[in-house]
Image (cartoon, helix red, strand yellow):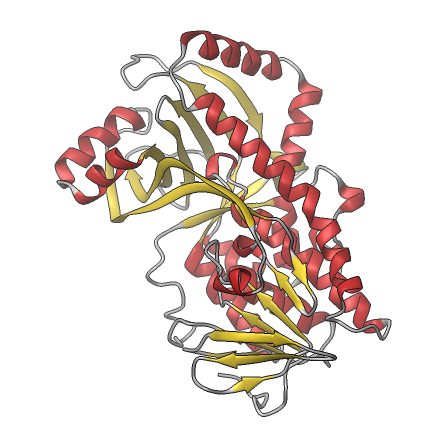
Length: 417
């Protein structure tokens, strides 16, 4: 799939061809063209026109991640398909409540003319990243996967399921929240399940959403309505696992009725477009992000609840930090796979990951219950925040991924490495 020969040993091999893996390959290859980067992906190879076609999901891309995509040259292809999030409303109610009072609202700009986020179809982003990575000389090998690896002096020996062997200086695992390579590396995790499933689908509605994202906190979990282009919205509906299974596998008419009870009539008549998909929800955080000549990236390092819409953004922050760490080490003539180099990446990402994991866990536990005293306390807290402009600006900065600009990797600030 690439003009660069696969015969030459890669300097960096990335296991996993999702947005985080391809994003990291693109960021590294763009800043250090002399580094050979190879991606090994278990999915069969597809053309750019087919890439992500079966993925009906869309993701919230924070302002910082958008700046990175723009710096990497992918945003121009993504932007025509993206929907700016111009404001956000937070409600707290029961499904049976006739009225849903809004307790908290956020304006959507971090700087003039720059929304704090965009909704982007996953397939669109996958195609844009792959296109740019191929142009940057990244080698794609698929379908194949890493079956085992052994770290040694100077190189890591990687055996592929196809029987081939690669000897990169660094192996990056971007193979998802159930990462096989993380297990092979002996890295343990802190993890638990919430007993919830996220029902994801696209909804077409009669009236325009005007770029407003809505987060309904319901007793069974958050119900997010996220604006897409046209009169469409992406739905992320957290439901108890057993009920979610019934809704996904059951009759379309029953699903429509239950959806309307939660969606409301604000946007007029609604209709589900495409399939209903379900994703079990839990928290997983790796105890270590690195080993000699080995690094975890994205969901392989952390999987969090979607309540704050930060899952993909957390992975893209990994991408920016790891790329900057490796490129700077390469320019200084350091060994890319040495533990001293990789520990810098781990220190950079550990606190942010832990903080986001704790935040989403606490929010989910706080809002996914119907206790009257707890409801009164949380609604009072939301109302207080709504009356404090400075605190709201701080929350907008965090949602935009710009909360601590001094610690941000350069790509997230829109700067080249």
